[in-house]
Image (tube, rainbow, N blue to C red; front, side):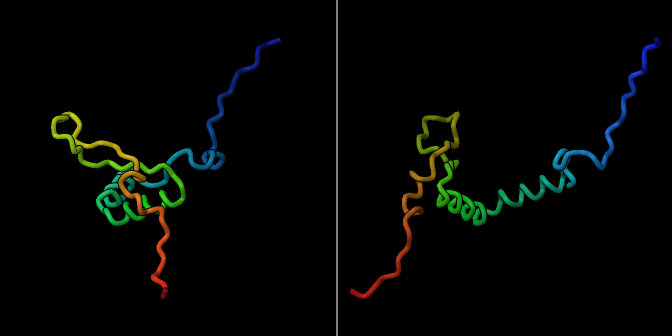
Amino acid sequence: MAKKKDVNVKADKDKRPVGKRPNVAKWIRKANRREYLNDELARKHNQIKALKKGKNVVLSIRNINTNETNKKFIRVNARDVWPGALRAYFMKTED
């Protein structure tokens, strides 16, 4: 008997798994990310929300030690920088 030919069938575009390829141009995604990173208020708001949810939030702050010139920024846990962010705020009550 003769050997059958192997036929490589190209993947149908409709049957691609969802999320395989981005549907937004790269320059648009980069522009949106750049805009978000420059908006400090939105970033801090999202970081505080994540901290309240119990996530491990790490902040990049300028290095206090001026002798370490190779490390301009250091990563610090947000719980150490914002100790009051986890406490609930209560309005003053009449005593």
